[in-house]
Image: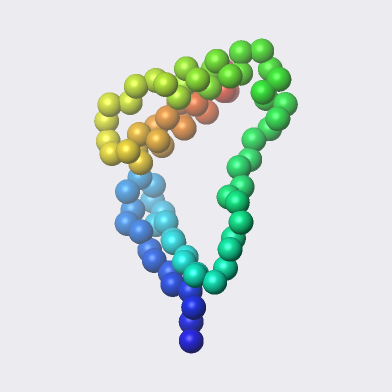
Length: 79
């Protein structure tokens, strides 16, 4: 008897389909978040992140808005 279920989400933003795996018996623990601690020590880092994230995005659904915000943040950090 299979205890896990797999669901394929629709393509909304990228050319990939998100997969959701659910299992009622497994506790996966906290979700990882990756960041370089050294970035936070740079002068102006937090301000660049704040400005890029607060930039108003007026097109698309919520998922598309997050994608655009992340893309804008990436460009701002490169500068």
